[in-house]
Image (cartoon, rainbow, N blue to C red; front, side, top):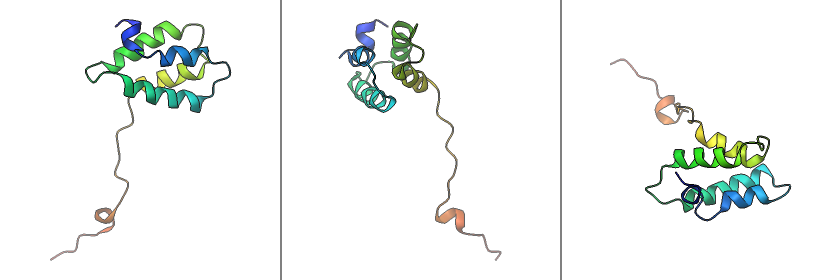
Length: 92
């Protein structure tokens, strides 16, 4: 994927240009970036392109950390409770 396709509005590029940017600000920019991608875009390919372009030499930058975190798969959801979890089966 080309860099201009991976970052069509230049949001990620600009985040690396902001001196002293915080992790929270990078997460906010990341959400804007994700919403600006076309529906047909391969998000993981775009993330890999951005990390390959901006990441080297900037491993400690908050946006690099956000982009890398976005590539990791979320944990599988577990049941957290609710009414059905509190109900006990009664023998008939």
